[in-house]
Image (spheres, rainbow, N blue to C red):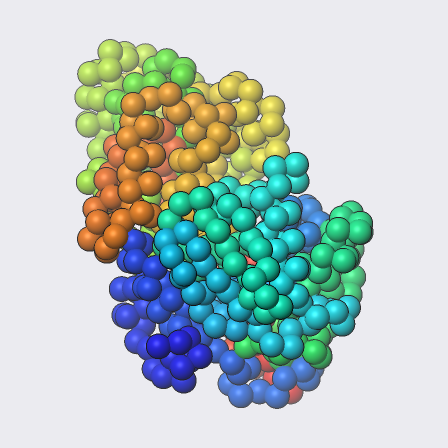
Length: 535
């Protein structure tokens, strides 16, 4: 049955979760697309589209431009969810896929050929129609190595994109990849005539096909949007415009929320949650977003898995979560959080066990362990790190010091040059996609993390992991995929070259008296897709 037919029929949540777990079955992903399509197509609560304005408080400044080929900053990425469309997109709140510029579910012609038909009448913000040439160009520019796009690593399976006719794009793959229907959401479609003419200008003043148009952006001040009247997709703008105030100071965000200057803020400080709850809505959503422990696996004694495991067992994670994060996190029991649709508990779970940590160090022949922990200067990480040291320094023979660094300096000046032993830092690739292949590939495939950062790529275990990751996405059925994923997760949990300590819960605040249909996100940022301001 086609997606458009399924869109008018109920589709149970449990069915979506079952299908999204079938990594090896292409048909399952078409079904998962329909799961979200069945609930889309109207603005929240039936509100009339395009009336009133929305004001929001954003936690991060503009660190990059808006070109979706290169933009990786939290704030421009969140903005781009409203400005651009993929062929398929993931709903920011539910993480379920829905048809965006695609008119129907992608069609699999054979193992290595897929076709996608474009939505009739779709236009860019400058009035130009969205064409198959724009789609082909958008994929080619991401795949072009000279452009160094962050998103190329997510679509290595695509060999070529070509126009089949005026409404259909044909994709030829390097190898069978059943996740194709949802993974293509990482590429946003841009107007070739604009983006190819002056990339810098396009980066500063983006032109997309999404429900909102870009008006202006001022670093450390605000981003202004307006409704795109010619948008004809599933989520038309439900406000005449939006203003996102860039309030990196936490106190300023809270004040803006309390005073009514804004209707929603992200990244609510944990200490302010209870006070805000007495006035407006506050919810802390479980996310994949992790605090990981990363080792330089070429430096002794951290090349020994027993030492890495000892430091994990030596952390009183539950106490750290309760004290530093006021309970707004879950200790890792797998690579992904327990709410993830493909969650599988790892065979190795690092519950607090100082006796086991001490025994592992002894087995590794380490009687004295002195090192400096490097962390980012992110506020909540700075709250957590001293408690990590407190746990470790209780272990006999262990002495740990700490240095907080700005994220750019941590990686550019220390990690990437090998000038580190142990790092604790945050990470969350789930903003780009939610499937296990993408989440595992971010840290464990390619050169960036395993080769240039935790330096584990020459081990037999790394080679074994690549085989399991390949087997999972190429599996012919659900059981084969799950078996490969389980082996991969158990391997990274046991070896722990980079592995989560905890998965954060992300607190967001909004005023339901001012917004209809707002949902807090399990990722950084806010979304007003389908959200309407109340009169």
